[in-house]
Length: 143
Image (cartoon, rainbow, N blue to C red; front, side):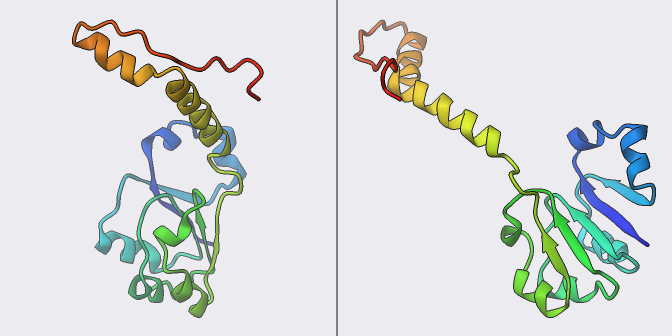
């Protein structure tokens, strides 16, 4: 069985331990962003594919004669993979459930503090030597 992670980013590659690699011993890791020609080459005998950021249009998917499934390493697979073509060719596309949930929530909280306390406005003023008193929101009892 041929399983390939065709575009593993370096931050993920750095997380791979021997114990993790042993879970799927026949997983082939390819780092970086492969060229279109290289993707075609990798598809030739691939049955299962992990995809972080490579685009797959209908023509490229058609070349995956043995391809059964693509696991997209996020939630926005339709931004990178022609899902209609994948379905026509019998290729299942799966995403990572819950990917980014914590990061999105933390970012929203950060934006809430930034807006409520006018952090960006005050930062810009301080950088040009101004000290402005601005009204801001205290979040106590606001939840």
